[in-house]
Length: 454
Image (cartoon, rainbow, N blue to C red; front, side, top):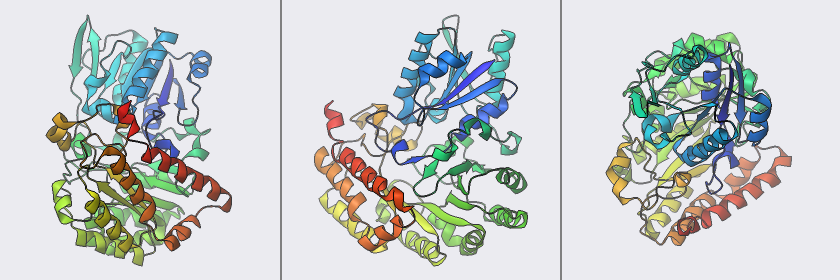
């Protein structure tokens, strides 16, 4: 069968996304590896937007699209278009949002909704289509049968080593475009899934039933040895939870002589508990750590059930700086912040003297506990705006002032010397484009309040 897998682009009014980073579509590469005995293509619409040409030339029997919450409207429109071009194409949606809120995809132009890990489910769907058999009994799917909605709960996956390696050869034409800031081209690898913590704004821990699933270090090294790119991003929910496993992995990478530059997620409390592990990883190529510092006050950290403290965050920053590891510091802005809150936040961040900061508006994502707490107070349910920049909750400040303050956090919290130092990581020829991009995002952010008027 001919199978087309699509990574969707962001909506026009969504801020961020592929304007500021593009990670390889690892989920689709995993799906493709599970049906490698068929004719499979991956279309990354963040880079190549010509869907019509792909449908006409390839003439797929099946189209599968993955979706985060922010992609819901875009994906539904894509499926509507696909069915208009050829109503006989079987349409399948999967991904995070399909798992936590499958009902959002219950439309006539989506034939199957896949919930949970999709590799083996999708393989079974293709097998049934090929043999013209019904979908009865396939776990983790929802579909219409004789006009009635059938929804089969997903079966939990507890062993990540049962999956084949991602089919990276199917994204060969796009790979030079995958990046995050100066890290280009950037490959991705999954070494674990889930998180033992219970932040109320996050639904990722629920997808594994609260378990932290880990791949064997030996399998990770085998996969790493086949990756061509210099930079590698660990697309885990949290990479360093199991310090013993990460120590073994670092030692195996060193023994194998693999020379890469790594970027991964690490909680501040994990870093503080394991400073020796940070040094070990620095020695084998750890260049950057994404740290969710979140807030500048303990009361706000408690509000989201983060399980860390401001003092803990400061210590983690010291450890990373002492090891010469770049910090991707991620903070959260509460919609109910007032002018004084923004002022204190700005002063706090400037005092930390970080090279790079990002600020996300506290977002009630479907599937998270926080969403259930506040869903009756939402000022918008437009998924295009669930981009961590727009707010879905009422703001204490007028919207225009709120977004002006948010923009100020992005542009007034990094000392000039630190900004110049950060830009030196880029090739000189990329600096003008980087400055232009920052100005573009700033304009979008300052005008975000207008999206609610529409």
